[in-house]
Image (tube, rainbow, N blue to C red; front, side, top):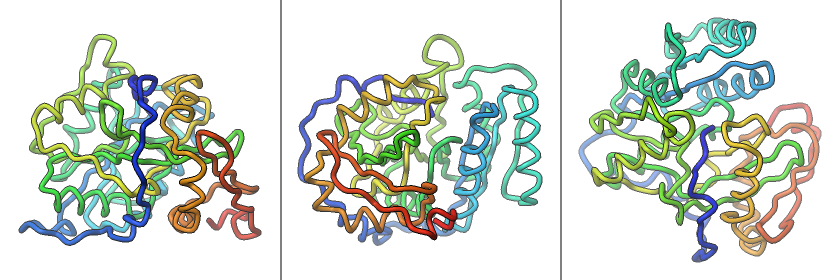
Length: 306
């Protein structure tokens, strides 16, 4: 997924974290709209390649597991590898779901232009960025939508998220509060009425298009970062991301919370990640200053049952 160019400038100051806030979501809805009836369009842009197909399938599966009932997935397929492209499209067709639509632009487009295509194709009142290589909690859409409604906001990002390195099977809790976006850009949800337009040309169109879109929303007001729910999103640093390995290492170094806070919230952390399947083997949960604890692999988890 696209990264955040401001990560390297993040300050190390953090306040006391309250993972117990996850138990408060979904919060009480205080306006007249019923979030359960709001159609949410999840917007995926994917560049098919053999090494990324497994991530793509997992991301689609995460969409299918969402608890929010009124939703759709718009999949904009960039050109990519021809065989991987055909396999991705065939996978979608095999699901036989009328809430998932594939869009194939006729021309080669920059990432920002592809995101604009996904917005144009969306039918929902709320739009949710859905990266093709990250992991999404089953309650992600429902929780973010209810918080956006409760807060009276027109756009929302998660202030905290998890970061996973498959090569070393390490998991970190990252806090994006000090970044310009005030949250992880890939977690953005916004109202259709905001008419976000991503850059289609220039340097920002290829990698920093998400930051440009968030800047538009921030300048328009009613932009809300949501804290206390890092388990809703797992940013996967797999080595074939849009941003290079150094960028992902910088995130782990600069904005991960310390091991002491992880230990204080170990039980809640374990409950939060329970729906995810990280595959076989032990999972090491690290802070920016070292290992906090290890989640031992179990027979069920090793068999892929999550």
